[in-house]
Amino acid sequence: MANIEEILAGIEELPHDWHKVGSVSKSFFRAVVRHMAGKTIQHSMETGSGKSTLLFSHLSNDHKVFAINDYGEMDTGSVSLVTASPLFNAKTVEYILGPTQRTLPPYKFEHKLQLALIDGPHGYPFPDLEYYFIYPHLDEGALLIVDDIHIPTIRHLFDFLKEEEMFELVEVVDKSAFFVRTAAPLFDPYLDGWWLQGYNKKRFPIDDSGPRAEPIKPGKITTLGKVQREFRRLLTTARQFMW
Image (tube, rainbow, N blue to C red; front, side):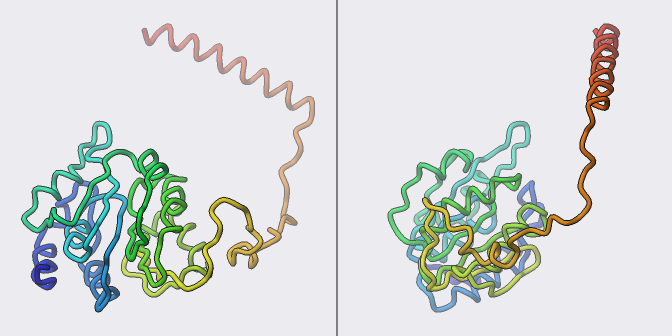
């Protein structure tokens, strides 16, 4: 294993825009090393690829990366940048290429994970989807990192995990949340049990006593239908001038 301080220094020297869609902060890498100090990472994974992959390739003996190199017209180079870097330790990394929405569901993890980073597609419900296919494989004491918690939908996942007994929030570094898997029993991924989850227990039932929308009366439906028909007529007229 290379000297981690040298690896950290090399990563920190890379420009912030080294990855076209942005990178995690320098303090993120220091936090990862601090939380994993003295621990052996036999197996790890992440969604997305970037500077974090460079570090994990030296911290882990077996690191799986679920990522794609470009998103349509936006070529991020998230894979090619990493694999071409002299800081990359290719011996420990396996790329599973393709959208995580397709690659994660059928993937068979053969070992418990000691480290996982959720940093793939950020649109809803994709981070939640990634979490679903990752959390059953986390070893007790594993580090689960959720990046970009400043995005509202990812913040919702963060808020849920803060009250989930399977996890303990140990630190928030910039826009990344660091959780540790506790000894709590695994929440069954194939049944229900919503009433057992801390997030629901604290908030159920939702207070629905506030003002409600006024019911639509039959006359209003007729008026709405007239508006819709008029809109379609105007749209048809506009198209004639467009072509």
